[in-house]
Length: 128
Image 1: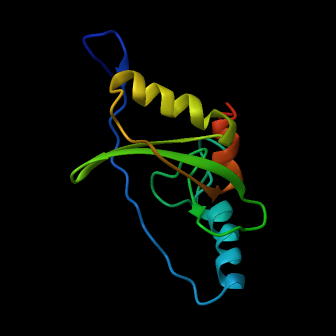
Image 2: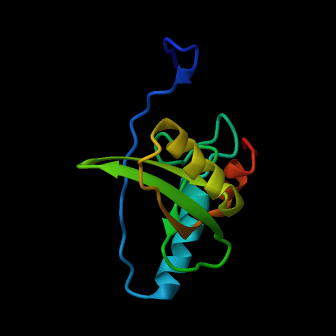
């Protein structure tokens, strides 16, 4: 974590986005079992996880899945660059207003999607 000039902190991390296309809805739903078994960290010394697994991993779907929760994406874009902030649906307008306080001319693209339960809990303030 690095402290910047205004006193805030920034955490630098390498992340990867990976997209899967499933043959059918049942296969897509079974993927959640893989997430919970190999990517959801439950203890500091847990073995058998994907390297770098997080306490609240993010896996999402543009279509509804059992046990996934509806959340919002709030995205701004300029050319090839974009910034986005995932939020609870009821907090989406607050995030959009935050973007607009920085630049009132920015267009905020907002849409809903389904996220895995651990990430939903993270958005609600849970850390494990």
